[in-house]
Length: 86
Image 1 (spheres, rainbow, N blue to C red):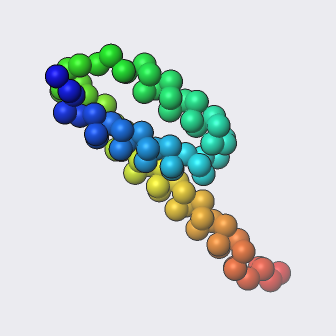
Image 2: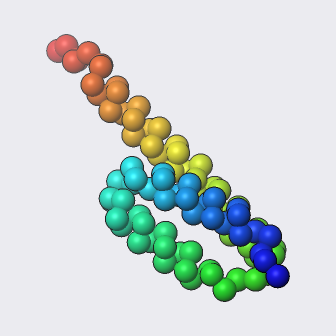
């Protein structure tokens, strides 16, 4: 029997992989950690546990998006702000 969460898990992995491109420690580091996290939980079959893991991944997506937004904001602010006069 196929796992009904398979599509959700694959979508989560792809989204995290996409967002990991802008990770401060490098995309290779993020990709390696992401793969090890997913491989660690590959044998989970309990639907409640899978839902909790997917929810945790979705919260990680929100954190990564916020981090990227903040980083872009800081760059824009630094680039376009006027120098302080003394």
